[in-house]
Length: 78
Image 1: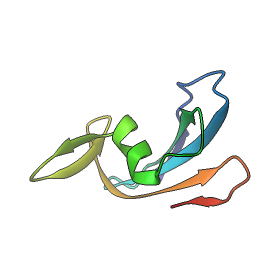
Image 2: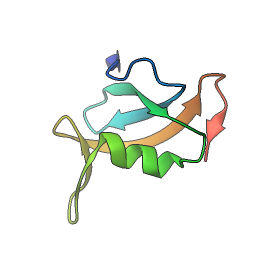
Image 3: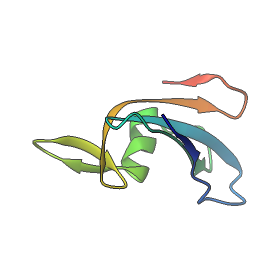
């Protein structure tokens, strides 16, 4: 199992992580920058993943097995 931290958003006022567990066993921690904490975890997932109606969600071409979000303090984002 490999864990990656994809840093692709800089200088955002508020950042939280979408943690993606891929079907391959890899785990990606993807920062999502938001102007206010008025975004749900699923809305953040929509910013970083691609979706296929029959096969589910994908990140970098790999299927997402599960996901969750935490803020910079480690608190869960619903």
